Length: 138
Image 1 (cartoon, rainbow, N blue to C red):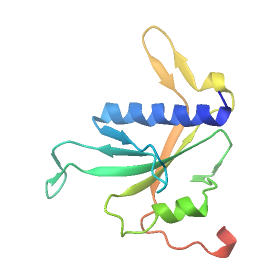
Image 2 (image 1 turned 30 degrees about the horizontal axis):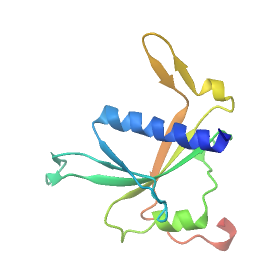
Image 3 (image 1 turned 90 degrees about the horizontal axis):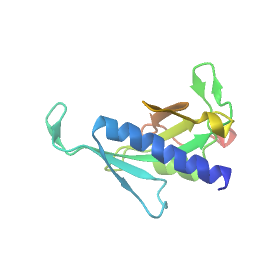
Image 4 (image 1 turned 30 degrees about the vertical axis):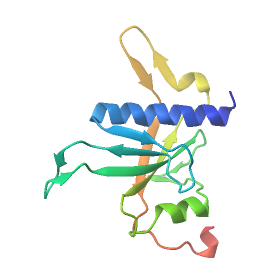
């Protein structure tokens, strides 16, 4: 399998494992034309004001590059994806999730008789209140 496709498949497995642990249901889109790869939804009433069946939408990205500078992740996101994820006029909150994996594919997962471990780390951010990019940021 192409290494980029392996990253895509691994990022789905990673976030789906996290969602299953949190008790969230997931839905996947067949066509990614709105920069959304996956949706997570909780059942029932949750949070202040007792909101029912909350949902979020997520754009998934995966990289083996060293993108961390201090406490900031500098992920190169296409302007189309940025624009699709930002703004507060969308009904369902949207997030960008970036999974950082080791360069060596053999270090992505560890499996033995009593557990499985997925490496390395997944970070997410809402771009809801971010504005237009300046030409120098493109």
